[in-house]
Length: 609
Image 1 (tube, rainbow, N blue to C red):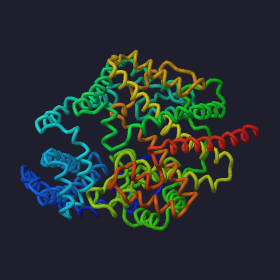
Image 2 (spheres, helix red, strand yellow):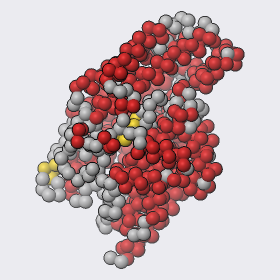
Image 3 (cartoon, rainbow, N blue to C red):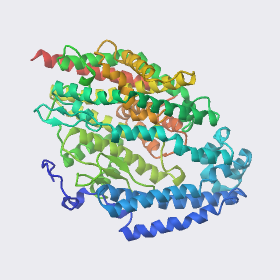
Image 4 (tube, rainbow, N blue to C red):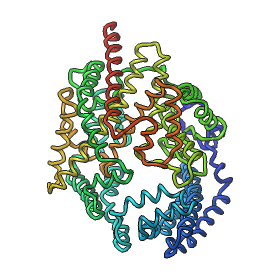
């Protein structure tokens, strides 16, 4: 099936072999309904453990076991409804199923809300003794250890109840930002390169900044930030409210800071955050060198912020169709061994993992989904391009991580934390880049591929670290009593831009407002994990290519480990210690190596013009 037609097909027009096999979860909606009722009927049984959960080791094990059995079935109910809804979001029947599934999640959570405080009513010594003496309970040893570590930060049952109720109020800043930014804010239309009126939106912003016509880029940039500037007081108030929310929960739960609370959740030492910022700051000269290369290749006298996304070189050599892309990805991932590539190929060719093509009503974008008791599922909206191939490789990384985790871990550890979530997906992308560069002979195409990877560093390491630095900065200012006015936020953000971009760019007035449109600032110290995850992936992919089988065995062991240990320890066993600055510096060294290659090819190409 080709994707050249501008007409969006109906779902029925898509060949079955290009659709995911959701019926592998439930044969039909009737089977889903039976599973839904089964979970629903289990809720009173879960609630019946209240007051009895910690009367003995046996009772605790039985309560946790029944929680997990119901949880596994609930996951299937939710995933089926979610996937069916995303096949056609206009289908009211599956909208209803998905709404009911989400409601069931809430009811399930309410039914087990007493588990954590009731378990913590038992002393740590007693829990350890029970775990040692009652063998079945050893399954939950790591989960109980994590729970024990949270003791200093768990309040009384009454206080916890009040905090739970307060969340509907304290979460309003983030929700209001989303409504304002995504729904209520309007942007002036602009003229495209053909003189046609073109709408500007958050969703289309980067696409417009990739336009070869510089006036289109400049006009889109000005249009978007004109609207954000018009709401600067509201947006500053919302971001200030989010910072105060984070501080309130940290203080209430006896943490030293909002960042300490956020990082304690995954047991990540705060020095990981600080050393990321330090090492990236020490290497900003490399980032600024890349900006000089961008300016040179675009043949611009002045580089502006609206010039940062337009492709440096163009190539039609990489407009891959879906079948060709699968072949390239499979070839690129051969270093990961037969177990990996066989399972992945079976998923792509036999087991219906991927929903490939766009159809009317289908959810946009791409993602990897699935549950502990299901196979992985990948949503795509395929258009023939190298970007789509990279997206597929990325989502396959997530899916294979889930596949190995589900296969080798019991349910309590059958997932993985955000800190490691982007590692497997990025390793796939890096191995794909290596494979493509190895077989590409054209200098222009090599430069295209090198820039693809340099842009990955720019967006995921340098940019996200700058965001992380800003997030820490505004929380620190608020902790010291400074009011986060629009003027204070603009000044802080502009100072950071000057540090990161140096003298290599013109500081358009609009860039001082960029903080006001970044949704991740409402996610409480989340963004640093993009940069650490990317750096870990650079280290792991290099080890795989250089050391072969020993490194592959370590890496596959990491994929199989789920959340069975602390994420820092899991990465250490894979061969990367993120408590040490070395992996971040190694990533910077790799960026420099790629940059040197790009500069050399760019000089050769420009000399021949």
